[in-house]
Amino acid sequence: MADPILINKNGDITTITLNRPEAGNRQTDATWAQVTQMFDDAAKTSRLILFKGAGEDFCLGREAMGQPTPVLEAYAVRDRSETIFNLYGAFRNARVPIIGVVQGRAVGLGCALAALCDVTIASGKARFQFPETAHRIMPTIAFSALVDRMPRKAATFMIYSAQEIDAHKALTFGLVSDVVPHSELDASVSRLVEHFTKMPMAAVLAVKEYARTAFGISTQAATDFARNLHATVNSFSGMRG
Image (cartoon, rainbow, N blue to C red):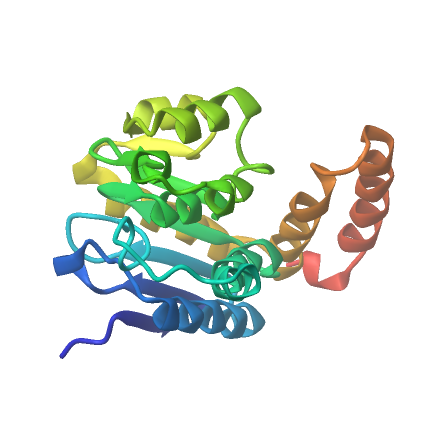
């Protein structure tokens, strides 16, 4: 039986691949916890993390999505949801950038993870959807992934409507960073990775550090942070080749 998640390290580039193409790369809570640990570990030793899905789909979400589950007490529900909030935290808190590569459908949790990547490159064949309301699921877990990634009107439309959108609309919504022809997806990602390998590591880390904080603070605070980070990093000997 194939491993449900693959991890490959090529120098300081780590690739994490969801590897259940026959199930749309859905994962159980146990394997999502594994993914969280993989990201936490990879972020300590990598320059960049690539996040992919095997086969035609990027990820159709959480195993058993939409199927009846036992009624649990509130604290048990909260404990179960921590698996996903911890996963979100691994994306947000990684000290290195995460590039998501979306070749097909990204649904539910899969769509949330596509949004959480620092840069998301989508094929023209990619499709995005949050179907929770159609399954009578209160979607605030998914919604919480979007609050620092998408404009309010775009996010609420996707959550309320449960409609599938194409890659170009996802680009206008701020869900993805770029859309390329399906046949050029791998080449486009390779060019981007090559650019990252030529950047001083201090700059790679500083951009992620700034992006992680600056969009959630006041303009003045963001300006002050930029001033200090600029002086610190650009005076570092590692920035001079």
